[in-house]
Length: 187
Ligand code: DGI
Ligand code: FE
Ligand code: FE
Ligand code: FE
Image (cartoon, rainbow, N blue to C red; front, side):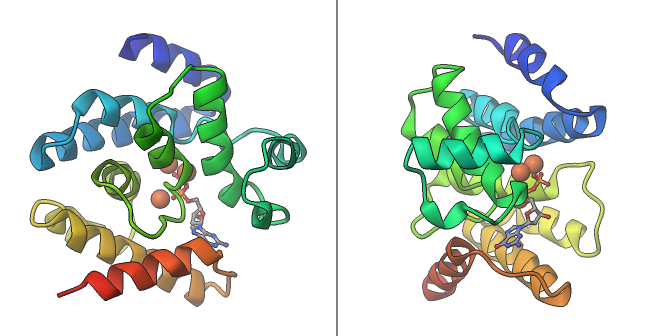
């Protein structure tokens, strides 16, 4: 399938705002892939599909977690944590994506994880810094993205965890494991 076909397939499954965000993630992911020597096509398709499950029914997603034996810890965390893993399931089962790196980039785009690949980091970072994102500090992250993929990834994870703590939200175990992994690798 080509870009236009993927875009046409995702468009009816999300509000306009999310679609515009997705285009931004796609363009940013392609730029980062060029910059860091990653496969641009993989980055493009993973970006287009990354939020495919964002508006799926929560009960349906929890059933997928049980049926497909996804991480059982996901039950009860809601769609913010479910849409990555379930998105990877949809990418594989509905769109025929078999590349494990692309599937992992979709699966872990919200939380990150220990030992992320280059493509996983690119999708995670692109999701956060795409041009439609507006929050204090986003420009600093955009500048970092042109310096070091590990440094910007680390800064993105720290920003997300800081936000979750400030807003008194629970932190999913993978998010903490990802943070610890990034800090251990920091030089
Ligand atoms: O789907 P997007 O809005 O483009 O972005 P995302 O998938 O990276 O994140 C979705 C939301 O999930 C965002 O508001 C931050 C939140 N989130 C990320 N990690 C955690 C989390 N929420 C909780 N409660 N715990 C986490 O560890
Ligand atoms: Fe998302
Ligand atoms: Fe994100
Ligand atoms: Fe997103």
